Length: 449
Image 1 (cartoon, helix red, strand yellow):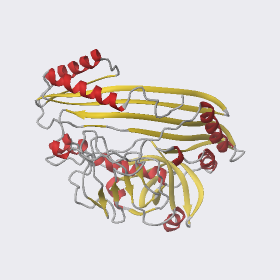
Image 2 (spheres, rainbow, N blue to C red; image 1 turned 90 degrees about the vertical axis):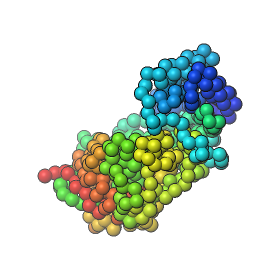
Image 3 (cartoon, one colour; image 1 turned 180 degrees about the vertical axis):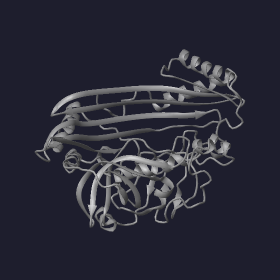
Image 4 (cartoon, rainbow, N blue to C red; image 1 turned 120 degrees about the horizontal axis):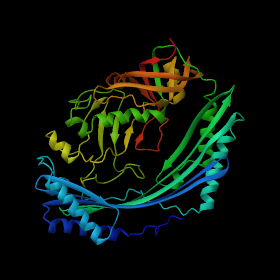
């Protein structure tokens, strides 16, 4: 399959027509308000292992999700069948659910006054006309580059190239009807190295909206190989409290915990350790975070959220102070606040660097732990307790001394956030959070007794 401008089975206009058809059916059947999401996606994933093609997968999906309101009673149903009968049945199913649900005075569509009315081109759609032979060649080159790094690389989990494209329409009974196409590409490799009968595994990947923004197969493979080999000879460290650097590729997870804690759903359920934190200092003053929905080619860029509410660029954390939450219309009503245009999540979180390179962060830390991998899910959003398995490197006098494994890093996120002392310039741009390596002044590290 060659993915081009004409690969979609349905045109943008056809998706709009389906959306309007669903809204009209909902109105005729008695819904006082309704909203619908119509989408189509397709893609291809090629995996190569030990130089041979292992899998070639194609996906092509479509769907309609409709939400109807009977006053403030809500029902939702979905289908992957775009036929007229299936759409009517889906509307009926949503209405049937609504009739049996309790009224909720916070439910309903977004306020028409906050719906988006400007829709800039955010450069999110770049079809890639790549033949199967070319896709296989790129993936094979990536894996080969990883395996060629060192003779101690004895096995491979393979290289993978994924190409995905999709488009959608969101429409509601208030007259909003918008959507856009987007593409996403990723290239990865993972290999295994062995020394003295002990094996280590690591990986690397690149992801982008535009194929030209992907790192080259040779670079992705080389980094995967180098990261694997450098883990050979790993050991544990003595239990204690040490400064810790979270490498950029794992540091984004820390900001993910922030986003979870300030999301409306967790706030109104009172299941967040950051209840009432708006306007207070939650990080050390070196931390500033912007939310930018209009970042060109951004992985989470959009002029409107999942309810059609306009998105806005804002400073989410200003010199450590949390300036706002992430709210949908529903969670905002539950909290007696206003929506922030975050139905569906955050829109590109950009964490400002304090200006140091990673080697400079290592020298600033002196002696401590560089974390390059996190394991497990030991994070409690209610209390802020944080405890995760980790691997990485022990650092002495600002220089990497040896690889470490079988350790745990722990703290409460309140303290962890306030102990951030620097953020590196090695910003990774491949996901929804752009962040460099993060230096934390002190954390509990559990290893050897």
